[in-house]
Amino acid sequence: MGRGVLGGVGGLLTVALDTVVLGLAVGSVLYFGAVVGFVRHHVLERISPPPERPARRPIERIASDVRRVRSEVFQPAPGMPMARRVGISRAYDDLLVDACHALGVPDTLTGLPPGTERDAERLHVEDALTRAGLRLSA
Image (tube, rainbow, N blue to C red):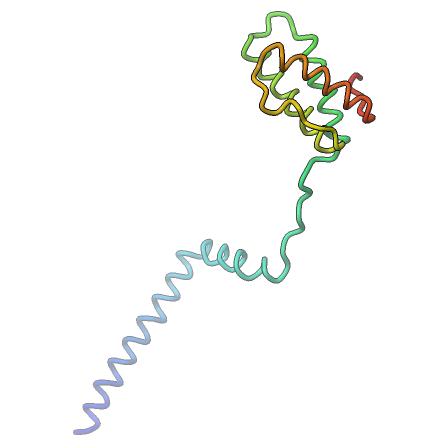
């Protein structure tokens, strides 16, 4: 009689354990990508973290981009839409700001609204960058 009670509890524990193991097996197959991502993110990155990326682009790359975009600003293609001209001008200003930061030249362009004051300041920044050793024309 005691054996029937223990067999009932033992049988119930066996069924519960089998269910948990089966659930883990099926879940690991269904969520394999998530499990791998979790392991990669939480375990592997702590073991060997990825190398840090440089905070800024190299000055050589900035200089080449400045020269390329500058030619588009001062010699736009015939029939170029005004929106594209404005976009290229803003990209050029962003590159000049990057060059200022890379060379330690004061950034006086940031915060100026578009217009003649910004255009005049762009010339001052170009001059300061040239004096700092950046070649602006090809």
